[in-house]
Image 1 (cartoon, one colour):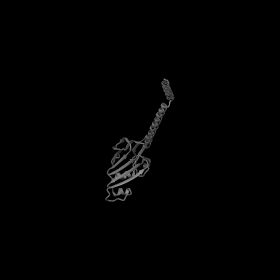
Image 2 (spheres, rainbow, N blue to C red; image 1 turned 90 degrees about the vertical axis):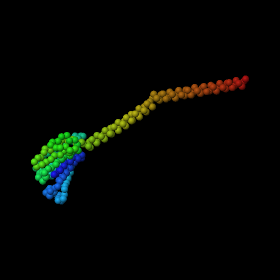
Image 3 (cartoon, rainbow, N blue to C red; image 1 turned 135 degrees about the horizontal axis):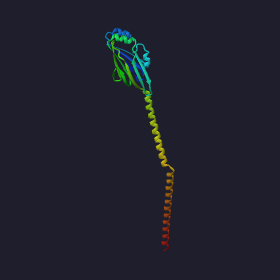
Image 4 (cartoon, helix red, strand yellow; image 1 turned 120 degrees about the vertical axis):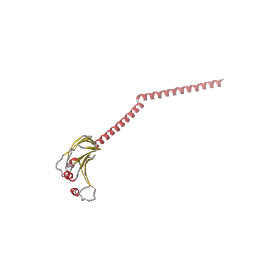
Length: 219
């Protein structure tokens, strides 16, 4: 059996991985690998920068991919585009079953003839049946989402700073307003007046004592 995987990563790179269990000499030679008769598994991997680049690679799986770009996510429409394909035709002839899977780091909204297994959809291809491959998926745009989160955090920080400044200004206005200054000034004047009256009363008491003392001496 052949396990043919197409994996979309968060950075939009596409990785292809072909795993052949118990490969024949012909399969090994097809992939340009020296075959060891004791080899139980053959693994062939390659990476493309995007689905567009992957489609341009020789011997890639025949897929038609349309992408609708949005700010927070991208919508992917992936479907089979069966045509003469050297690798697919060769592997179908050399093996009983090809298990083809597409793995997507997002929300798989719908599939056609495939079986969902987590974030992957799997199809089985034989020489008698080539199923219709179809996937509609939403893939989050991590970079833009991170920008929004940072922007919200920055705005919250600015709001908190402005709110703190407003509170400080309110406290300053309440403490040093003209009404408070006049009140404080009035309190000071009243205190001075009270102290002045206290001094007058004190002097009066002293004078009274002097008068009484003078009268005592006169007697």
